[in-house]
Amino acid sequence: MDFAVTHHLEGEIAVVEVRGWIEISTAPRLRETLIALIDDGHLHLILDMSEVVFLDSTGLGVLVGLLHRLRSRDGSLAIAGAKDRVYKTFQISQLTRILTLTETVQDAIVAVNTGAAST
Image (tube, rainbow, N blue to C red):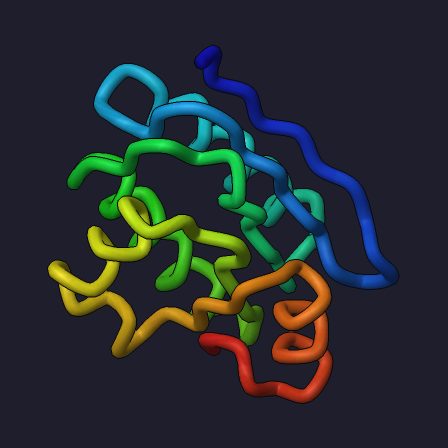
């Protein structure tokens, strides 16, 4: 599966759709996309990971860095749709303690709009 990153806006929230493997060769592209969105003023992000099939420690590092960058700017982050294999990676790394993970993008939108997303 090819790696791809696209995004669209849902009001003030940037929904970033990620597809494929997030690992050492693709994580820099994801990081660049996410930082560009933040630098453009999008401080509330949802990562739709429903089409992500693999996530390694490099990808986790990108997400933790993103969370810190957003927190320093009073932004928020929610992860939507992580499938079993990817969700287990979040659990094993204990990032479920600091990241907001939801089943759907709509649930993530609610979490961001109510302030329940990782801030």
